[in-house]
Image (tube, rainbow, N blue to C red; front, side):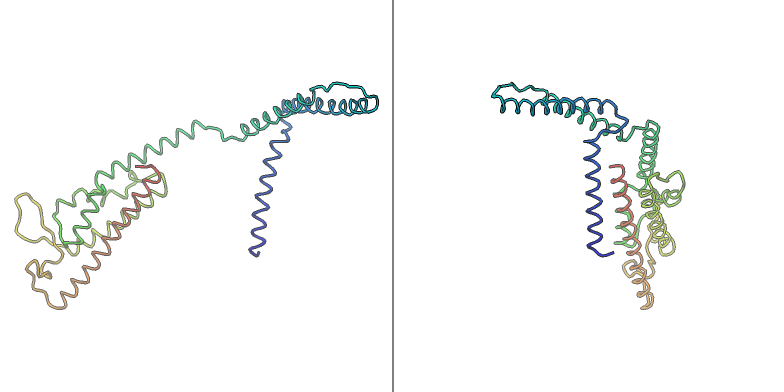
Amino acid sequence: MGPTKMLYGKESMKLSEIIKKIISVLFPEFTNKLTWTVVAAGLTLVSSSFLELIIRTFVNESFSWNLTDGNDAIIGVTIIALGLLHNYGFVREKHKAQHDPMEYEKLNRELDHDKTVFNELDKYISENHLKNYINYVMRNHSYYSVEDEPLDYFFYEGDKAKYSFIKPKVNTAKSELHDAFVKFENFKSKCFFSHGPARNDGKLYMCMHPDWNIDRGGHPSIEERNEYDKLTRQLITLGKIVIEKYDNYRLAVISEYAI
């Protein structure tokens, strides 16, 4: 089908819809007996007045009589207008979507559920904490163990059914965020090691291959330096994906729930 045919088809569809709407207003539905009665009465008054007008004109012209004009036609037109207005309201009300209390209640329950899930997850992956944490690790190739403790809960529990959203768009965004975060954390578990003396508060200073990092007292070979640079690129790539997925998740939440 060529572009002209497609355009013609669309214009025909729009025209047919407009004609249907006009017909629905001008011509009452058979089930709307009141409108039929009112319009019929109006037409009767108009038609009778029209016949009277012809006769009155004939008499005035032929016999020079002056017969005064009545107002039945005006009344008839008014009645017809009222009838058509009634029909418009009837059709509009008939086709208006009906409010379903049960469906409304269901939507409210789903909204409450999803807001509860978001608020619970936000305790562990609030925007400032998660994004600051990821950026810090990417920039410094290190972190203190206490910083990722809240995020551990999301790591282990984030894909559980109790943290599933009803809205597919939000749930998909959350799942993609969880998958990206798991990959980032798994990378850390393989490439980050405790560095420095033990602390009294139990915090561990975790660094990416400190023995390959000159800034942390390491003495790497050329091969180890190259490997460290490769790992750095992987770390940054994985971290950026987490931040991207988090932004997508928050946008989905905002668009669906405005929170």
